[in-house]
Image (tube, rainbow, N blue to C red; front, side):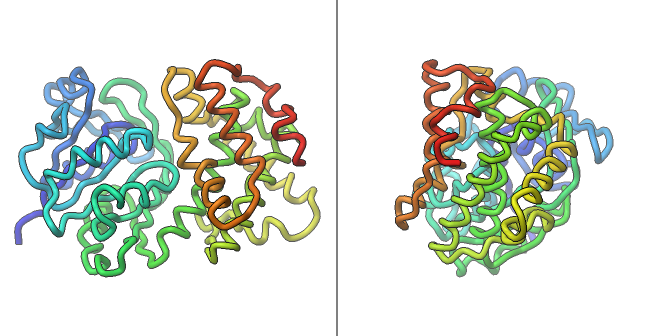
Length: 338
């Protein structure tokens, strides 16, 4: 049986590591990276991956444009920023066969938007439950172990998930779920707390979660998200099999603050990826995180004032009309709803 022909679109930390380890395992893979200097370095020196899985230098085919791919693909791992999702998906279309699968590796919930371009029957949702960062051009660091969780939007495509599972297992273990949107929503909630609060405050996770007001906003983001989930009929699983959102709201308020403080201590050096985007002058993925909670809230009639206010703050920072800083955590836009 012929190997599936694979493309990875986006050579950031997650996309690059998926492409690198899959290529090392013998998969037929091409990587798309829009930066010519990175493509050149991958071709000449190889993609360098370090971290929790050791040090690796891997050479693999890489191109700068989707249109330069060598031909149709059986599986495409879509790993661009969410802000580039739609434009890249449109460029992918000519390289898709009727039964091709497109796996979303973005932050937030992008699968519904992706399905509008490539077709619901082709979309595979994926929760990336491990950490990575980019240290330099073609130099990636895998910062933590974990797993993938995958599932189809269209149940008719589930029989082909084994192909995606086999590819991703060259990197880390894979769990297949029949409820991928619920798994994605679980990760979205925690990201909407950590990533967005880090972006408006400019603080590391440890610095931020020492602040009582930041923890109060964290709790309110989760509460609004769970109110939306309840109305939509979503049963949200624990994030990473550890953070149980339903148990989180049982017991006194001080226990919630303690849980958040402990999270902040454990990951105290973590810097928000959204903050890094803002510092580079790039658009954020806020519409696919807190913005998703807000948009779903509007659809089902659930108020989400804190999530909505955070989206507004991030948009103001993007436009240059608001500064990043600790004052945002105390701003009446969010403090009024505590």
